[in-house]
Amino acid sequence: MFARVLLQPQRLLRPTSTRAFSTTDLPNGIKLAYDLHEPPASSDAPSRNAPPIVFIHGLFGSKKNNRSMSKVLARALNRSVYALDLRNHGDSSHHPTHTYSALAEDVELFLSHHDLQNSTLIGHSMGAKTAMTVALRRNVKIGSIVPVDNAPVDAALKGDFAKYVQGMRRVEEAGVSRQSDADAILKDYEDSLPIRQFLLTNLVRNADGVQKFRIPISTLASSLDKMADFPFKDPEDARFEGPALFVRGTKSRYVADEMLPVIGRFFPKFEVVDVESGHWVVSERPEEFRDAVVEFLQDRE
Image 1 (cartoon, helix red, strand yellow):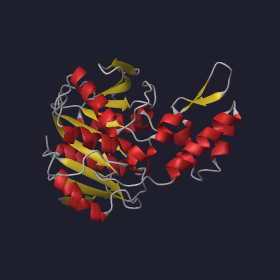
Image 2: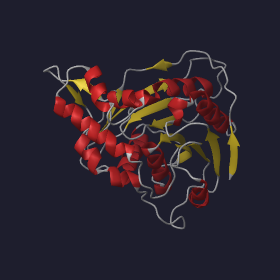
Image 3: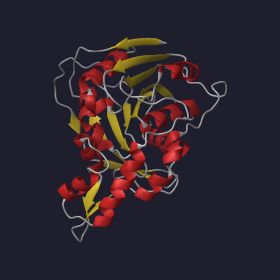
Image 4: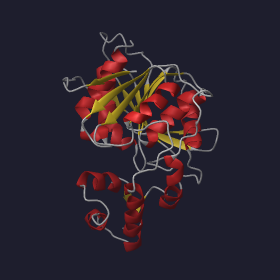
């Protein structure tokens, strides 16, 4: 295990290209939506054909949350970046089964469909456990993983997530027509404006002008306990031998020091980077997160 703290940002230039979101119909009946962020078309970019990055959001998130960082990483590393919407999130289809095994299968089928070899999986929170699950299942060949502020352990979710569900249900019951009215309701459940804005990215206006959440709130509410679990219990039964970078927020409790030995047994080639942030590492400290990922992946080119 190797630990480091990154503080120095780097300036990254040159535009990337992003296609309008696309969808992939998987053999298991799930339709996954994604954005593809391609690196600059430059003849002096020898790593342009390097293995792609697949970016996976957290609970209640979507590909939109990772749009800016995906563009930055595509530009900095000259790699294509696929930002996914997991099932029951964003523009992807809904399904009553929402477990890490199901989420991992979706990602595996997506990788196989697009013939993405030796990919780097970057995932935050729920996306981190999904990436770890894919790596440990070994159904597809993964090059490396970057789990962000989560660990391969059973650990209760912060009570905030249950509160978010209550707040979103109240918004729908109120039948508001303006996002500002929805935000006023959520204030009773979350003080932080950035987190409320994050939750409100899921609002869409229906034909009657009423704001509704596009995510299946009941399905996700009933799956909160499953999102606290991890499908692998014994590192002797499953191990990922590739490089793994665990990025954790110093003000978060999801990757405590006492979890590092377990991480090392599942992922013996892991490193840790500490970023001075809470759980929402990518949005709270984007420059530090970018630098950690760029250094980690450039070291392996």
